[in-house]
Length: 346
Ligand SMILES: Cc1cc2nc3c(=O)[nH]c(=O)nc-3n(C[C@H](O)[C@H](O)[C@H](O)COP(=O)(O)OP(=O)(O)OC[C@H]3O[C@@H](n4cnc5c(N)ncnc54)[C@H](O)[C@@H]3O)c2cc1C
Image (tube, helix red, strand yellow):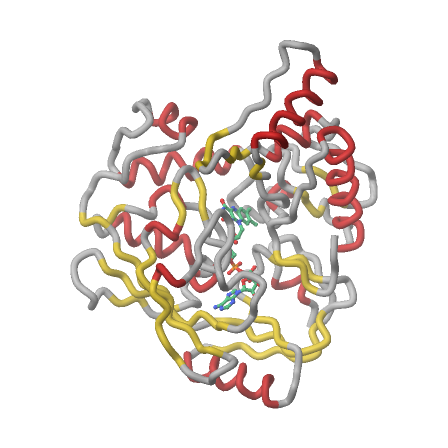
């Protein structure tokens, strides 16, 4: 079986072993058996943040297919099995009059993966509403809850990312019991909704607007739209200290003249986040950029690298390297990949 059939970018060679775990016990058993046999293990959710080598995975892939949503924890508390489709959970929360996830509408993948990179979009991230993550600990063999404050959530990261020690079994969210959305923080979304930043609308309205914005950018999976055959954003937005930002500003002025401005957002501690898409475009890689071997930049979003249909993982990574090196040469900033790379490096 080819992992290309299980990743949204439709790339990845064969897996030596493949187990679909429909219950929590099956999931834990499959992981325990692989670990006992010293077998390399890949936990697979929706495959929307995975770049797998053309050679495939020489070990066991365990596909998470557990189900169940519980509201037993009190008003606004939702405990969701790792295998539940994320967008269905967001849709349900909105339909049930719960706020806090509405801006995370339209993101592919499964709920169990959301804490891994602290999924975020349009001014919200799951770290704001997750109270605890229930895990199987591959080191101790125990099942236990990790409270939010011990998840080490940061921008597109957490203690779970890259570590492989914990298998997420379920995630508990505490949402606000209200028809209105959380305050809208993202300027583009606020403008679309016709409210000031910090304003509120009905959550259902926010969800619809987010999905529409995302569709325009090719950020909602649509089998009929080749621009969505991607892993979403390929690079994270770099967070720069003051000297690094000043160097980017100087490079921008040298390239485009004294009026050049570098867009950035203060993120505290004297640090600023610079949109990777802006750096990539300024370095000469526009939407639709196509070096011609099957991988190209989406025609709708500079950060999405897509498989035009005939790409290989090698071609996708060659494009990613070309972009990374171009940005580094132009601005001295080294872009880091957002997806999890399996059997390959950038
Ligand atoms: C079109 C598109 C748009 C996207 N937009 C966004 C966005 O706006 N914001 C954003 O943050 N991300 C976005 N993403 C990235 C991706 O959807 C998220 O990271 C998502 O949470 C990945 O979920 P998944 O189930 O597909 O995980 P997978 O890709 O299957 O796995 C990702 C990683 O998590 C691990 N993992 C998965 N499940 C578990 C588990 N139960 N326990 C332990 N480890 C696990 C895997 O081993 C792997 O390392 C986008 C992707 C696409 C294709």
